[in-house]
Amino acid sequence: MALFGNCELSKRSKSIGNKTKRCLSKASNPIPSAKTVNPEPNAYSERSLTPEDLQEPCGRPEPGAYIDEQRLLNSWNTGVASTHASGKGFESLHSGSPDTYEGEVWREHESIGDYVQDQNVVMHLDRDHSPKDIESDSDITTSDHSNSSLVSKVRRRGKNCNFSERLAHEISGAQQTEDENLRNQVIRLQNELRESQAFVLSHIPQQKSLTETEATADFTYLCGAVEEWVDCTLGDAMEDGLAKKEMFSIDDAKSFLALIPKAGRDAFSYPHTDTFNVTAAMLMFLQREVFTPELYGAITPVVDFLSGIEMSMMNMVPTRGVREYRTWHSETYTAIANHADFESHKKARVDMISGQFSSLLRILCPQIEERTRKNMIKTSIVEPAVSLAHKMSLSADIYTLEWTSLHNLTFLQRQNVQLYSHEGSDSLDLLSQGRPVKDIREGEELQYLFDYCPQLTVRVPKGDEFAGSKLLKRSKIIVALIKPSCKKLSPERDPRFYIPEVTFLQWLDFIARSYSASDNHDGSDMDMGGAKKS
Image (cartoon, rainbow, N blue to C red; front, side, top):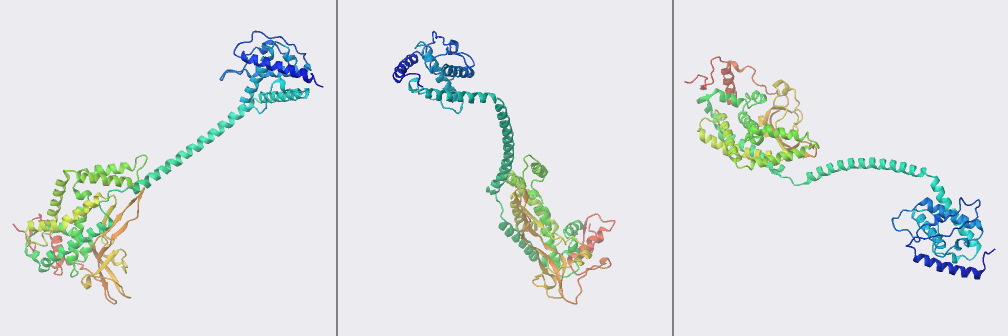
């Protein structure tokens, strides 16, 4: 049943609208008073609506203003419940002064609606509809039930106060998981960064003072220069026995013979081995004095200090790989070599090596004047060797001269070696005047005699380690191609009872060993028979 007639309701709605507009114009001023309304209490209301509940400023709250949520909800719930229980609809709410109570209640309802919407509560409060839009009692009842449902939702949310605790716990667990994932990601990224840095460094153009092709060509030239010098300068002198007619120092003889390993000494009794042994001895001297020391011995006083720095780099955190410290080695030695004072040290070292070399070879070519012999050796052998060693020392790659593993074995140990083909070496047959051995027929056998020329290898740094050793030039060995039904060569067992006449080096070795056993030997010069010269 309708509470009012349509006409009367329309007039009252217009009156309420006018009063609402006047209240809006005074929204910024406090309400001076309010008419007390005492709705009939019933089971749906918690308490009666009092004027104190309505003493709130008209209009919407300012942004950021504090709103008492509980008070607004209580005011809303009390007003709606009281109105519904009175059975008068909105009439009791509009019975007060048009400037006070009526507009205040409606504005307070609007504030509640705004606040609840701001709190993301799922609800619908049509604030754009005023009481003049209500046509019937059923509309009022529907609105009341909707508002009651809103209040119930808000209250249920208040009862579930432990929701915030559960949410905080879930957020904390999720945060811990995220932190752990981030830590693992940081570790993974750090590892990837190190790998990327190593990759980038490996592709950065480094100072390449020596390529593998250049090293091979220079070493081949050096070996050829030594062979040519021996054949052209020493060959005739040794064959003619010129050294046997001149004085020589027993210490020089010992120093030269010390360059020949055991395998070469055992081959002294074989004919035509002198030139091969002398060539091998000269290359052994160059390896010891030029290629083994850093920068051919020109910076010996500081080598230990620089080597210590390289070793300490490998113990640093983060660790440096072999490429990093070899790059540092290359850059440091390049800077040293470019120093203004280094050239004088290099020249002095070249002169000293040439002088030592000339003294060792004096017993082989006594007919050549000392200064001439020194200049010949310096120009044709020492300077090319120093040039190659200089470039090797400045390179980040490691170049090495290596002899075979057989050259230090005893005669009996070598006899047990089945040398059908020696991998990595070129075999020269002594019985065919040093010709290369190409094929071995059935029944034939290779007898190893001694090393003739070392091999050249290189190791290239790759990240944290070196790549495998790469062979650039094969070594050369002297062998005897033994035919079927022929015995192997065997050196003299006891040459102490006679002066051998087979080779010059065998004679020289006999003299050196004989006078080494003499109690009266003082290292002075000896003639060919070993008589002491005054």
